[in-house]
Length: 138
Image (cartoon, rainbow, N blue to C red; front, top):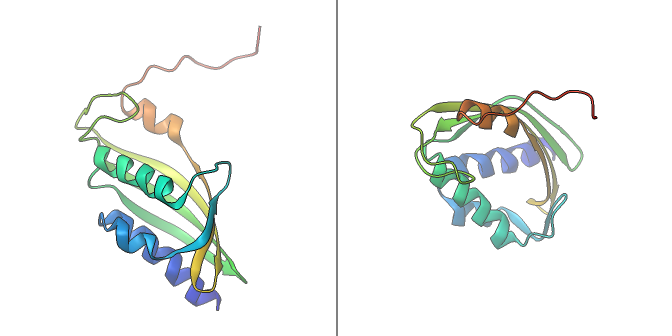
């Protein structure tokens, strides 16, 4: 079962990387949730569409894919070229990459839960956003 669950998760990323969002949607369980949000499946897909509109050649490269029971964990990176506005930042043409960590729960052959951490600060810095150094609170 773990190998099948890994295949489902990797297929989702492959489809998203190819811009095949409707096919990716078919891999999401009807009771799908995304940790930390109340997003519907449509909103989850729309956020991915928006990201790939900004980085149309965005591709995941996974270093580790581990599954146990109904959980699948991935670590790796997401890289692409900034070709469209992102978070109000006009396209820069810069090639960027950020580390990503995902945890998915699979039920009945479909992804029912998604959790993620991404190095957004690193991505913004690569796009030229000036971020003041952090220090002790005053």
